[in-house]
Image (cartoon, rainbow, N blue to C red; front, top):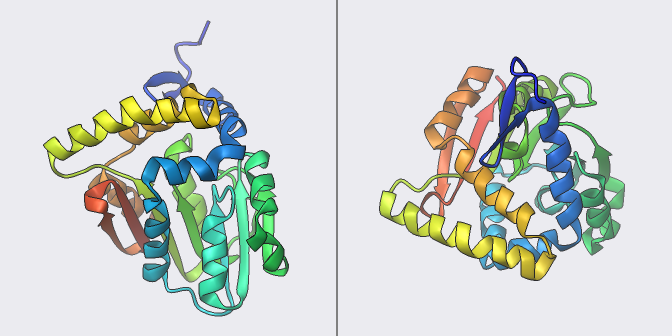
Length: 250
């Protein structure tokens, strides 16, 4: 029986003890790791690639920068960053080792191996010194963190003065009718795709539910401000299906 005094959080639409969430999220991504990249393409019709390119356009990586990509999984953001920067270093951190293993198998990982590190770790307790990185990114990962505000605080800690935070995450459409159409697609189609392609309906049901539980653009912007980041802004992508949030440690 769960202790009623224990702090709880959400795992999709389910309420769970905080101490259980990380393990359950790890289980989701252990399950889908080998099909994760394929499912991203199928679910979004490839649009996730455009969103990630838009992230790089706004970020404008510079030669010699050090990137920490949290919940970096199979390396999509790290590979893009290193190619745009020309030279630099990227550390990919993920809670789930099978996701990192899939990333290491990609052709880009071989070509960029001297500029890449792969680390298993927790976004809420990063295994890095203060002021270690020029850029911190997290793409479609912060909604899976037990306490997103703690992850933002850790981002602030490990960034150098002048460093930049950038978050790419699913968000909320400003038009209620469009949101209802998107929800109908998300809840009725994506879990079925997960069953057909990855053999795992439940994990994709959770991922859809986790999108609905995540704060909207303005509320998440407030969380970034509250952490201490300056010049925080966001840009909607595909009418708000996803959003990019940016902030600076000044």
